[in-house]
Length: 288
Image (cartoon, rainbow, N blue to C red; front, side, top):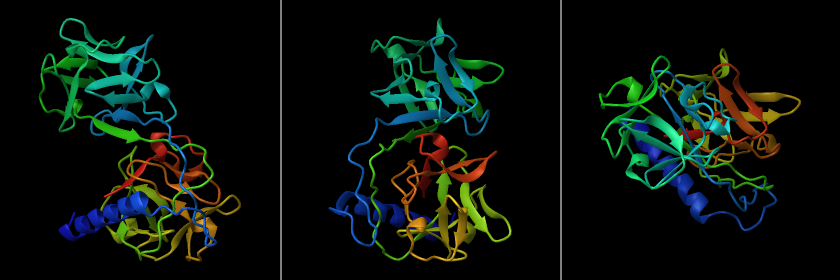
């Protein structure tokens, strides 16, 4: 990735942060700006293996801790990370590890056996100094850190929005083109006339650049992402209508369609579509 591209990405994030922090409108305007949500649900994290199994860390009292196919709607794959603890959202229990007992999900007790350090994509166990290792054949275990792909984990934090009727919309600043990265797959939102709208390997091309305005404007064609129930999701000439207005939120958050209140959803199998917002990893997007 070029230094110029990186500088534009940093500038774009700075602009969004400033707008959300200090320029949220006090009331909706006649041009269609919307109020920010009044509250947000508690954030949670998915812990996945992006390089080896491409599965997620899954836990339950009956099944224990295991690698399972990532499912954005499953509460068994949601974790709360605070004070070096990995708390399982569904059960309320904590990830516990020891050389003798292995990896298990038990009542949170604040001991060093339940403390984890997240560094360089590794989940390092504070008490033993070992790393969380996962594979489909061996399962989840605590072994010596070795830098392998089986010990590389990606922590993706999602902050679900409530059903509040309005959303913050950025003021028009002129587009700064950055990619929209799909958190679950790690791929980028890509569009061309021949290939259509899809998730594709991030490559820094203009086919993956999207402008930071009230709309999501495509860099290569200068067209806008448009959605309606009758026409579906498409990229067409920008026209300033509510069908082309999106609330992009912050890092790893939903891209919400203002007119319908639905969210941009993506997966390798289903492609890019608009669905009811559900707080899943398939609806989490970020920019660089």
